[in-house]
Length: 328
Image: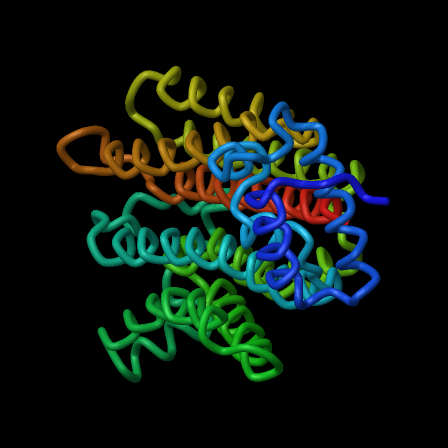
């Protein structure tokens, strides 16, 4: 025979029973029996409502702890939205920065040499030069393509959103191959646009999916190589003290080398360092400072920002998935 419970405890159990109407009868009985045992262990066995609420919580709140959530639904729908959201806004921010640089940076073409890699940046080559002759200054509207396409996935779902993502990435890839110095500024944001296409698909392969060590090592090696190339090219035309180029490059290389460690603080530091290098490059490019070539610090900082952001996003996805799986 069940032990007698005070009226406050009986009322609490009745309210809990009604709040558990989403469970089957058998499941409801198990929850009520478990709660009854907890009440018996209370000092006053639930004589006071205040004591019951303090120890067990409100009946409705306690009932919500037993609600079932479909794991697959969380993993696929909200998971993809989560990835899209954490990718879209930083891409949008970088796209806006790129537009600002393209519109307001000091003229750079006269600073580009004719030897080595610089010869590929000379004007008059590629389809963009032909397009500029045809439409003139209207060509600048191409800079707004990544701004628009970076946010479209937030409002366009399904196949239509995927199509627009691919179109945006393809369009910016064509711009990057258009010839001259101007398209080169779009390389970092184009990389992120392609990442916006493929990252959700790769991460959604499994609830705990994240880049393996091989991917991270390859990304670190490529990033260090790009930083080294940009540093070499930047120093060749920089009129100021060489340490102003070497010091930021060394910081980027060290942080890039930490990419495979999955250390979140290092990834965030690389994001911040990339932005600072881009800002410093813009300042150094002003005629009132060193009149330096902006492209090289922009590429070093922008690529660092892009890869570090992808590492941060992957870590956030893995952490979210781990916490979700812990609920079941």
